Length: 138
Image 1 (tube, rainbow, N blue to C red):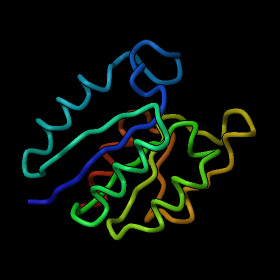
Image 2: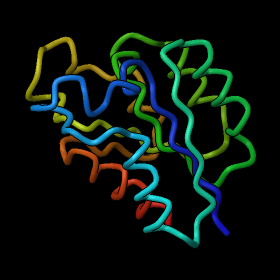
Image 3: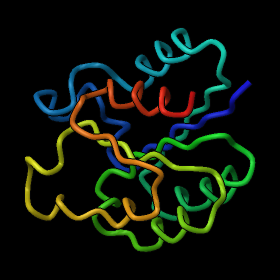
């Protein structure tokens, strides 16, 4: 059984409440239940933190034992060399995910420090971006 973890960064705990016109009205907790029902043959885990160091610690913890990591680092995507280094330093492949099309938003969101170290990048498909990332590991 494949072991995949979704790691979400800052403010993604506010999904369903924060800017629903961009991020939708579903909470990630409810969406994760749906994912687990859809992908019953995968051992699917979830972690969220608003704290950069906790995201790095989680990447270090799972980055040598999981089959895949789906990482939505939120705004840290555009600012964190430390998270980029953590992704580069682990063995588990990472798919960078964004709910919105970051290239259609503010210019500071156009730069990702993570992309060069990720297996791939999926963005702009709403929560379906997570489905696409899971499917890339199957």
